[in-house]
Length: 251
Ligand code: MN
Image (cartoon, rainbow, N blue to C red; front, side, top):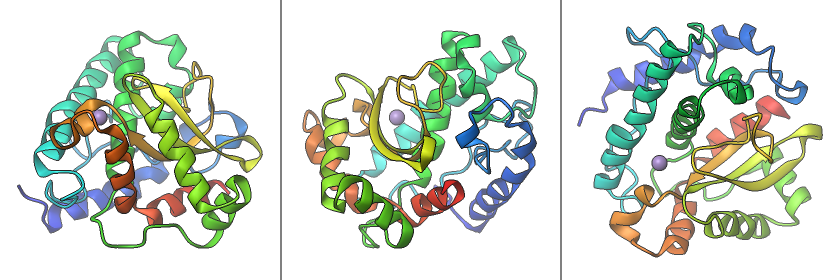
């Protein structure tokens, strides 16, 4: 496993490239119009821009909450397959090179189920890796994001309960989300499979600030049937600085 300065540098490089995609956001709803293209074209030879970016930490970094074997399988097998399948579909369906993934998702109804499943899968996982960090840091947001959460949900604890319930009550596979939508309103929602709230076909719409994967592949090796235990433990490794930065872009 190599998560050295080079992969860190690539990660930062990819993040910096986000600005280049901003001109292609015309199809997004008005409340998503500014600065949202944070899934930029990747640094490899891939022409579609839908390659995986390097994991910003080692597979062991999230231990003991998420075990290294789960992380390795999740990143290098499950998420890698979404990226590969999306690239294949993007070529087959003639998605123009350099189109941001947000733009594809905003009109995903025009494409195949392969684009919906793998485009969602790729976006959701690229976001998921970044919303996590090694346990031990701040376990709640601060500043404007905390104030907005307290305003919308009454308290941070009440938000945690809602978010947990969204993950617990999602039958089968899917995601729990904290999103910011029209009127800058925060909501907690969930989606099935690899759908997400950026998709035109989603009943819940907004820009995802935080997403939690509740597919069994995300937790089964360690938690088996105990999804609620995974949900509660996972709180300790949310990268609130990253979530805060997404919030500030939109607020
Ligand atoms: Mn997953």
